[in-house]
Amino acid sequence: MIKSIRTRFTKFISNLVLPPTPMWARRKIFTSLLIIFTFSACKKEEQNFIVNPTINFTVIDENSNTVTGANISVYENVVDYANAISTKNYGANRFTTATSDQDGKASIELRAGKEFYILITKFDNVRFANLSNISLGGYIAGEDLKERQTLFLRVTITPDDGNIIFYTTVPNKLPINISVSAISTTNASLHTLTGVYGFSNAPTAQNQNTITLYRDPGRYRYYAKSTDGCVWADTINVVKGEVRLVNLSKCESGTISFYTTAINDTLLPLTVKLNEVDTIGNITASRLPFTCADSKTNALTVTRYKGLYNYFISSRSGKCSWTGSVILASDDCIIVPISLCEP
Image (tube, rainbow, N blue to C red; front, side, top):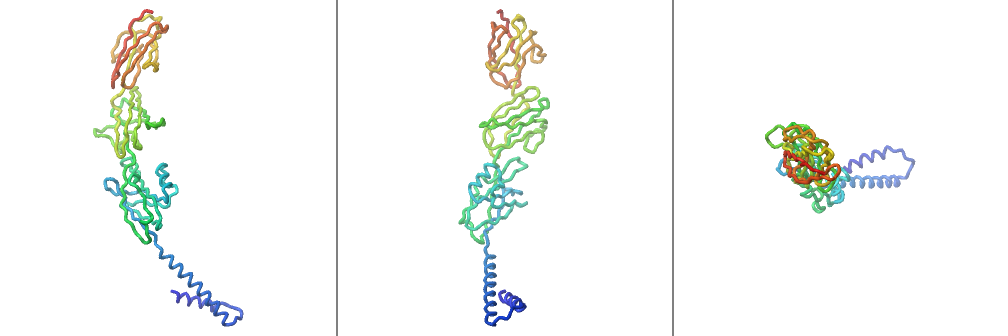
């Protein structure tokens, strides 16, 4: 190679038009340029032989299925790695990235002798869940990365969150408005269920006519209310990789009706409170006794979630009052008559 360069360089020098120069000076110029040129060529050839380590990944899930389209993000320090996890902004301050192919494979080149942090993420559209290697760790020490080295890593990614699935099998409750919030916060996400789930098996994240949410592990509260006044309210524990089903078919609330048959009209209206703080309204007229199947005209009827309720009723003048308690069950109907009172 050097001989070829010297031959071409000699022809180049021979074609130059130079002013008369002593022969010893020409030889000195030629020798100096040739030495500089030859040194530069050797340096470039030496750099081309520096080979950084390569990592060949195979990405699988917890069931040993290969994962296509997993995003492999590499960070140079633990701060950037931790920020990516907490913010879920995986592209910030990333050293390099790759995506697994249809066989779950990907390859990246790193720097020898330097530590790195590997974060692999994928949103699973089938399970409606985020998968990652966060719980399994992704630290690679600098002493494990040597020049010309090729590492083969088989990395498992597992769900980071769990699912909550709301559904109903009856049409007369729709639409159902749903509010979901973590126990530790008042910020709630709002959703509306508008379809009936019509299959006998339990719904999955892929089924239509459901509300499927993915949430970090922890406790959540939900409140749901249908157009006919049915109410559901409870707390639910979300676990990684698991599904929590909430069936909004059977009403978890009931109705309480207050009425009076024979009362001095000077006492009306009667004000009704539940649990001392919940003023539900007024009774403004008397009526005949009735059952749950009858019309509730001139009765004060409210829908409440199942549980124990204390009631307090007072007349317009405040000279007459009535107190008591009821235990309301799911899909229950309770009728409370108000007895005669003489002021």
